[in-house]
Every structure is written in C-alpha cells, then in structure tokens.
Image (cartoon, rainbow, N blue to C red; front, side, top):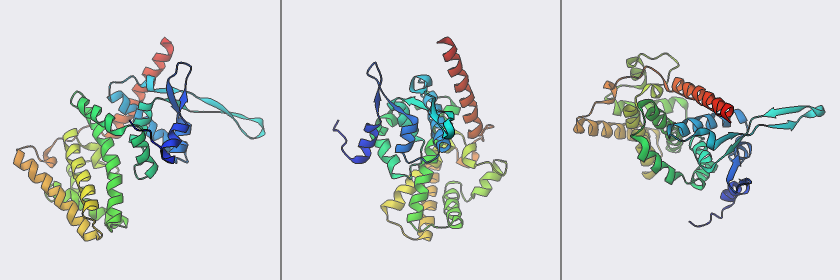
Length: 285
C-alpha cells in the first residue's frame, strides 16, 4: 500500500501514538481537532454512534474505545477532569463513518482509515445481524448519504428549506406511489417530532438508502443545475426503484410493517448496555 503523502493525510499520522507494547492509537480530543470539530459534545455524538456500530459488528467495544480521562489546568489554579478516549484505527474508522461527510476533511479521514475495506467486512457480516442491528447500520448510512444528497441538491439549485422539502417529497412520491412525507408520517401513525426514517424496518430503509445514493449520483453525473429538474430526477429515481420492487414481486415500502421502537430509542438502549458492560469489565479487571 503506497504511503499517503498529502498534508491532510499526514495530519492523521502526526497525531498517532504508539504505546509501550508497540500498538498504535489515537486520542479522541486530538482526532476531534484534526476533523475540525470545535465542540466536544458534537464529537461525542459521533463517538457514541461509533461505539454502537462497533457492538453491532460483534467486536468488543472496550478493546477499541478505552477511556482516558485526564485533568487539565483552569484559570486561578483550578483543575478540571475532561473525557477522552484512546482509539484504535478501527475505532477511528467508525467515528469518521459517523461524522459529518459534508466536511472535506471527513472524506479524507475515511480514506485514511481504510473505509472501503471495512465496508466490505460490514457487508459480509450484515446478514448475520438481528433486525434491530440491521436497522441501526442502515440508518447510519442514510444519515450520511442524506447529507451528501442535500449538498448535491444545493449544487443543483435546491437552495431554500421550502425548496428542499419539495425536493424530498419528489423522491418519496416516486418511491411510495404518490405518498408524500406527510402522508407516510400519518400512515405510520407517528408523533409530530418523529422522523419517518427512524421508524422503518431494515428492508424499507434499504430501499430509501438506494433512492438517496442513486439520486445523489445522478444529480452530480448529469450536472443538474435547476431545482425543477432536480425534483424530477429525485421522483424518477424513486419511481424506478418502485417499479423494480413490483417486478420482483416484493412488498412495496408503504406496505412494510412499522417497527414499534424508533432508532433513537434503540441507540439509547445500546448505549446503556455498553455503559453497563464496560462497568462490569472494569470490575472484572
């Protein structure tokens, strides 16, 4: 594998540490700075999702995310304890996978931490996951690709929030046979603040992920620069996916069951379970 020489790649190499046993690791606080995160709380969200993804991969979380809290000096001689983690390369990969892909530095980080290799490993293991774990994996992918789609739509002339809402509805009406986002929300009997993507099973999420990725690709490939054409493209892609589902004789997305528990609840449950298992591991040690 060729050595990566660009300044951006070198920045990740520069913050790499080697422990007494010759193992490489990164510190979360230093990685956050390298990834242009100005607030720790925002980076902590990416860490939390990465830890969930680690558990979904049936890999011991405590082996890759090691708490390394430290004390720093404050004004007037005060001292303060702050959270930090010692991260393996795999942990760093999972974190950049769950960070904001609209940042150019995130895309570079994903390459540095061998994103394509890990994606293949996840794909190979996907069918062995339970339904909740599959939902968490695919929902994480839709978050990332929706941000990329938003950027592609903006470049295609979809500028205001109102225009983006129309653009999103165009994709849903194509995939869901004329149903808008509001229609789907009502059909699923969701609360006002619930997000419809958080209440989809893995099959429905996968259909929407395909809609999102293919629309993002087509907007860029066709160099679309007008909002109306972007809307038509999103509807076209959604409709083509719907026709493929019909031809295969599979269940249409609007007829798939709605899970009882939303993704936020699943994430909270997994985080609590992780915290408990990590506490037990510390007791054992």
